[in-house]
Image (cartoon, rainbow over all chains, first blue to last red; front, side, top):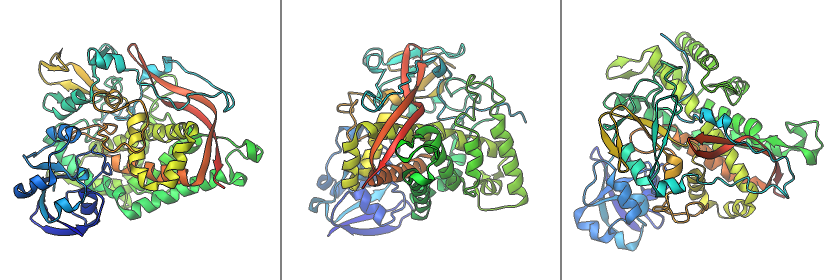
Length: 103
Length: 430
């Protein structure tokens, strides 16, 4: 199982575990507030924006150009912003902590 | 309160479309080619100037064509506003025929935020299972009636000859029935809206005809009056009891919200449903692929939305002298964000004119972009996923018998956006 801790905009902490799919799908399965995933994961809507914890960012890695372009025009972007539909659940990211940007 | 007319915010095709080229193809399937093809007429202009200047009733519009330029302009709401006089951000302009401000899309922040925030939870209901179950029933009933020849709409034909107009008999009916779920009124209301025809917001020969849309205004007056007397669980009741910034909504504001709800999702959803039938008629392998690999349903629907781009563009008004895509834009002049062109931008999408149902990253703008992105998108996506899913599951082959294309004319550019009529036969899976 791969574990991800979601910290929501209103301070709630949701620890979610999954085996595959994307981090966005994991958030939806666990009803994480602020993660809507409207477009179903094709990087078109930016409703799954998270800030990866600084210490964990290297595990997740940089966004590709398409995601970067989306983030450029998304509100509240930080140096560790990712659209979590573009982050596959893999052993590499097991145990990371992220903060949900939207409320 | 003046209520002259509305042609609807989103989903308003060009009035010039009626002068546009129409092609009737009353032929057999064997000679019926390219019915599903939606060419990108903006390619050369996008690669060249990046804009297209068109006239619109003496109020010109600079259409912005590249994806990054479109997104940037959509994001810059301070510079390119939506809260101009009502009807001006729609192209063709409805300034001459309507006074009611459509909400929330003809507002800028901060006023926009209050209305959007009020409506957001209601319009996100389609993400829930109970809502989707209702849409599933609506779509199932449609397929039951089409695929059972004994109850087919065209009863006089022999079973093998039964045809349906995808626009009038299928898309309009589905769109109307699904809308009853969105505004939470009895299904029987759908028949009233179906009876209005596809062109309730304008006459066939004059898209800027003020009298035609009065049908909708009068209807909304009645519905609001009814909800006052007999409160229910419908959107009218919800809005009558709602507050924005501590103030109750005026009837004009409620009407502004409802006109957008009715108009924004009408032509757009009808085009998407109809175009999907045209697409699968020439791509039966795609239908089989989705049936065999339903895990691709979501990416398939997003890709069809990108390819169809049911709404060609939406306007904005410059709040000061500025630039877009390297071109000067004067204070108080209009630009438009051309979603259809942006969705074929070869600098972002690989093979942009091909439908790739498994396209992974697909940053399309079929529902717009930024703070004014389509409020009805959750509903539209849910309906389309259920529609395409059942189509793939239940239909082996879509046969097009006759097609009358709906082509818009934007300056020198003609864009096919859908069909006035698409006669189809659906062959069920064994």
